Length: 264
Length: 322
Image 1 (cartoon, each protein chain N blue to C red):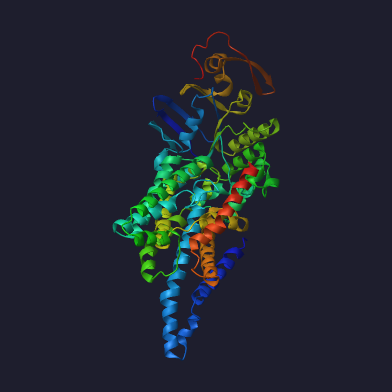
Image 2 (cartoon, chains in turn blue, cyan):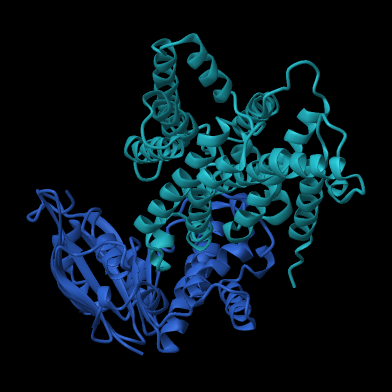
């Protein structure tokens, strides 16, 4: 199992510096939450690591090997990526959509491939939908099917861009629980989250991004401090504790002009 | 286990139609008359079969398969069920290229067709952008088609003699009648290379079913995939149009007819669409020969008569869904 490292990654789009020297590690066995206001560069950081965008400076390595020297198929086997939005146009069965995750392994219908698809469908809890057409599903069901597609890759590293956005509370909890179990198996998971309550409870570490810069990174509770929340989001949170788990609810806007001009 | 009955049935149907195509014609000669005891009859049958009917059969198969295959590839690439070399303007640009090559006596007519098709494909990619929506794509196709048709009309308008204009007009209607082995030899190399490129896109197109981000994250090189689809389509459709004239709607119709049978996975849809295109065009060409009353109906006219209403119903059905 190998770590994914952003080595001072910058990305410039026209005049805008979307990522400004991001230095970050994703270790095997952890759930790393990427949080930050809209336009902070969370998705872009994730997309760079998934090989969807090329940093203009710096590089990303997997197990010490730079991403672009890994080769497309090897990269796809090592790092699975769930985009924020997926437009499914053809009414393909859920099963077949999930099986696309096996393409980097050859994409055939070997017993191993079928096993991976079955396991992914089970893990996400949509085995009963397997013969349904993906275009006929509800938004939440489709999000789960696409998440299962990402799991079917059986990669050591998972990059998930807002996997919970379309889900109801029960499924949000189910997905975050699943991420915890996958991390316990030794996978490294980076997940973009807008829901700070989910991040505070389920992520081992968080990276707070703001205006393309890494504002803070570290163990979740210590990192999501009052100062960081005020600086990144312009909010104050209500905190609590339930058993060993921490509770964080975004509570009110910090009054007055935001010192960093969070957001864009 | 998956069952491949559709594939097997299509191959049988194609073989059957190839034999039928070699046997049907205005002269009541059959291919097997070539082995007749009567030497005159045998020679005549051989000439009719080998030099008149077979080139026609082979061209119908090559052009039909090219159209069916490229239709399936373009629909997969553009993630759009209305894409087809005719609808998006590739065919009319290929026709324009061929007409110009013929008109100026430049290079080869097939080469002109391919260059025309290539220009169309590249212009489309620029006009419609990276992930073209239905509307952008259709409008770009309409613009390109109209331009090509206008320029073709200009060439007709400026034709040195009415005879040359007439010749171009007849060729534009699209047909595989009265073609020789020379036509086959001109077009076949480009068509075969085009097929090779198009067949190699199956895996990438399958991944594209869930969008560009997913495809790229699965290790698909989208730039290369687009180039292969464009150059492949230009090669086989351009060369087909150059020898048969424009034959529309085959590429649009065939994948739609076959998806209910084999599903949406391009890896399975592409070969089946090639077979289906060949079958459709060959069958249409045989029907035309059988119903010949007065001047023979042109193949391109026949496919348009059947294809255009199909296209309309497709648009209506899509409108009903959205």
